[in-house]
Image 1: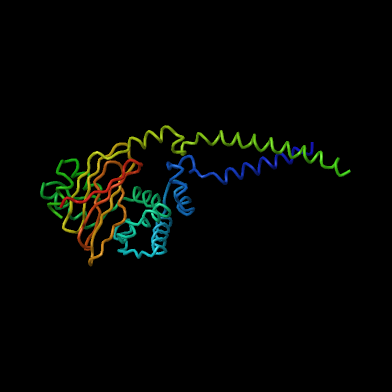
Image 2 (image 1 turned 45 degrees about the vertical axis):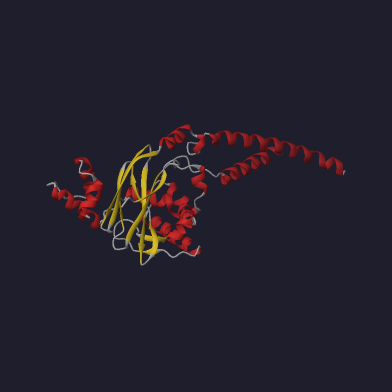
Amino acid sequence: MRTFPLLGLAASVLALLLVGCSSGPPVDVDLTNGEWSAMSRQQQDAVTDGAVTEREYTAGYEAYVSCLADHGYEVEEFGRPSTIYQFGVPDAAVVEGADAECYELHFRHVDDGWQLAHPSDDEPVKAILRRCLEAEGLGTEGTEAELADRIDATGLGFIGCMEAFG
Amino acid sequence: MTYTDRTPALALLSRLGVALVASAFILTSLTAGAPSGGLMNPLVGSSRAQCDIFNTAYGVSSSTSAATSVENSGCGHAKAKLKYTRNGKAHWTGWVTKAGNASIVVPVGGRGTVGNHDVQGKGDLFKKRFPFAS
């Protein structure tokens, strides 16, 4: 009879070990096991609740830049004129794979989650879109996304607008 | 005396082994069908298989911005990044991400000459790199 407490303890320990060793994402996170296992613990924690905070977005960006520095690549940083960080990665980092490695590890899914929840509203881009809409006698008020949707809806051609009025 | 002490210990170990195997089997069965399991989930698998690019256009705007219009099937979002050259050195921008079929503008204001263009979507089949025609 004294063996039952021990069996229970063993089963509990095993359950904890198996759960702890699980490599897959939480059930409600739409990522594959491969994507999940390629992410840092910091990035996993950031996307687990389905929403990326300002602090998590910035931490992910900084970890990505730091990772590239560890590989010997200096990122050109242009600040944050809109909702997202703007920067430049040396071509060699892209060609040799360090950019993809660091992005997957630290930033990719945080970056996606942040941008989808906070669409860019870039003034220089909006200025181009407004000129295009104005030339057609259409309204020029709204966010970058609203202006782009208006152009798409009227069949002006988004690419044509950019080429003609940029 | 020593022999009789070992017998219950061996029996306990045997029972523990059975319990461990049973627990592992039950937990494996419970976790195998998790929706996030990628290939284990037919819905996720089919969704990703349908995610493909079928129409992409590009535009360059006076070295201030470049735009791409991306149509896709089944992708939750599309992404684009640009290669540009400044002071003789080639760099890539970060990814700009939009939901679904998207018109994506990648700002490169003042950074130099725009070179080529990388477009991706969430899905393994959706990863292509294009040079600008111009």
